[in-house]
Image 1 (cartoon, rainbow, N blue to C red):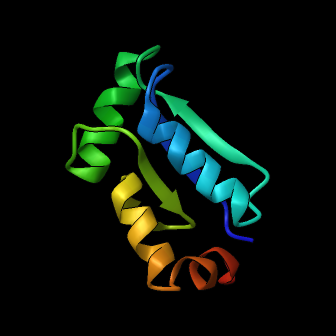
Image 2: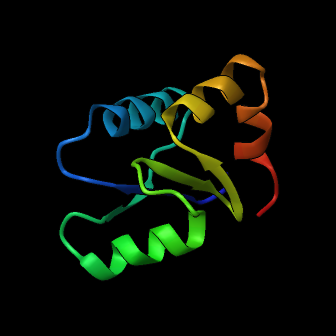
Length: 87
């Protein structure tokens, strides 16, 4: 399974939803980068994604986007192939 990285904050309902969906799809380990605890990580996220909101999710090297983007991938049956792709 591809490595999943999620930029998040401590209090974020969309981050919680994203984590729940990923867990439901079999992702046991999510590397969480807390941007509320490290301003440098917030800057890294904004430079890397060109976005300011959380969550920002990467599956392997693919930037998925936020929770709405993740859920749309799942509805389109494109999330599992991305998770299962060779990394």
